[in-house]
Image (cartoon, rainbow over all chains, first blue to last red):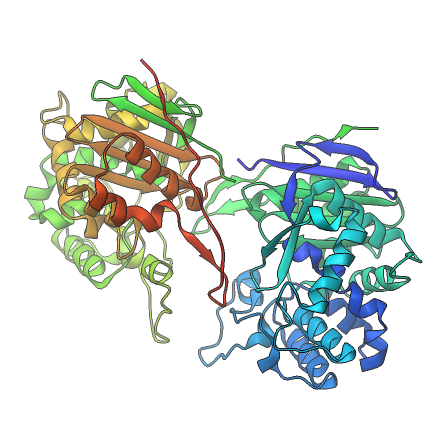
Length: 319
Length: 319
C-alpha cells in the first residue's frame, strides 16, 4: 500500500480539490526542472545560442539517454563552448534500458551526456556562459546561477525564499521542497501564464516546448511521454524522483501535484490517472491510452500474473 | 516515509510488544520458506538424499546465486534425480550483483539454479520424489505437496487453514498471507520448539541449519547474512519480498515480525535494527556491526551524501 497526497489548484493557486494533505511538504526533485530553467530562458538564452524547441524541452527533461537525447545535449554543449567534462551530474546507465527492459550492449560506454539530467545541467552551464559566470562552481548554493534559480522557484511556487527547504538532488544540484499545493500552483502558472510579471513569456516558452516535445522531456515507454501524448498538447507534466508528479492543464487552468510519501512510482502512476479521470479530463480514447498505467498488472519472472496495482484515491472538493 | 507494523510475541505466541498494527494481514513471501520446507524435513528427506546441513539451510534460502549456492543446488538436484529443467521458479540475474554493486561478466549465462528460490523449489521436487508424487505439477495449489505445506503453515502460524489467504509468489509457488503476530509466532516456534507435536525436530533442524549457515540462506552483504552473523547463533532470521522480516530469538524465546506496508526494504532494515535494540538484544559490538543498516547513508551517482534513512519506530508494551 502506498499512501500519498494530492493537491489541485486553480490558476490563481487556490485549492479546489484535495486528497490526503494538500499542503504536505514535499521534495520536488525533477518536477522542479522547468523552474530551474527559467532564469536562462527569461534572459534570452535559447535565442542567444540557437537552441531548437526540442533543446528547450531538454532543459526540463529527465530524459532516457536515447541517441536523440544524447546528440541534442552534445550539440547544446558545443554551442555554449563547453564539453561533457563540464557536466557535474555524474553518470548512470540510461533510463532507456530499464524503461524498455532491454539490456545495454556489451560494449556500451556511458557518459554524463546519458544522465537523465544532462539537459538541465547544460542549461545551467549555458546561463553561466551567457552571464560570464564561473562554470566550475555552478552547483554551489551560493553561485549566482543557483541564487537566480532560488528566486525563480520562490516566485513561481509562491513560497517565500526564506521558507524554501533546500537539499542536494540526485544529480548534485540544489533542489527545494515546497508544500504540495505550491508545486501545483507553479504548474498551473506554467500552463496558463502568457506574460509573467518577472519572467515574461519564459514560463509559457518552457511549458510549450515540453508539451510539443514530450519525447525530449521523457523517453520511450515512460510516464511523461505517455501522459503528454494523451494530453494532446493540453497538459504539461513532469515526474520527480521519490513519487512526485506535477501537471498543468491549459484548457481548465488547473495545477495538479501528487506525492507518494514512500517515494515509489508504483503507487504514483495509477493515482495520477485516477485523478485525471476524477477531474473529468479523460475521454474514452485517453482512458484507453492510460489504462495500463491506471491498473498495471504485476507479473513474476515466468510471466505469471500475480496481482494488479489498483488506485484508491478520492478527490474531495475544497473551496 | 515508510509506514509499517511490528509484532513481538513470546514463545507461546502471546503479544508482548507492538508498533502500528501487530495483527496486520501481511503477505509472507520468502519469510515462509522454513515453513514450506517442514513437510520434506519432517519426513526425513535430508537423510534420505544425503543433504548436508548447508543444503538444509538452502531449502529456506533467498540466496544470491553465488557459486556456492549454485553448486549446492545442482548437487541436490542430482541427488534427487532431477535437473535444472525441472525447476519452475523462473530465471533472474543473481542477487549477488545488486547486493555488491558488481556488473555481471559479459558472457554470463543464468539458469533457474541462480534464482534466489532454487533451493526451496529443489526441496519441493525432493518431497515429490520421496513420496512418488508427480513433479510437473508441483506448484499447483491442489498438489499433495502444496496441501502438505498449507497444513504446515497453518500449524506453525496458528492460523486455521481456511483463514490462510493464498496468492502466487514471485517464484510461482503458492504463498500465504497471515496476521503479522502469527508470522512472529511461527518464528518463535522455529527458534524454541525442540519437539513439535506434528513435525517433531524438523522446525529445530531447519532453524539450526539457517543460524549455522546464514551464508547459504542469504548472500554477501545482504541482510539475513549480516543479521544472523551479528546474532551469533541466537537468532534465526528471514526476509521476505515487499518489506517483510521475521526473526526468532532462542535465548529470550521471542518471535518478531515486521512489515513495511509499501514493501520497500529501505524502510525495513533500519526498523529491524532499531527493534532489536529496543528489545535489549544488542551489545556494543552488535550495535556497531549493524550501524550501517540502522542509519544508511543515501548517496547520489557522484557519491555525494544527500541524506540518511532514520528509523522512527517505538515499541509499546502489550500484555
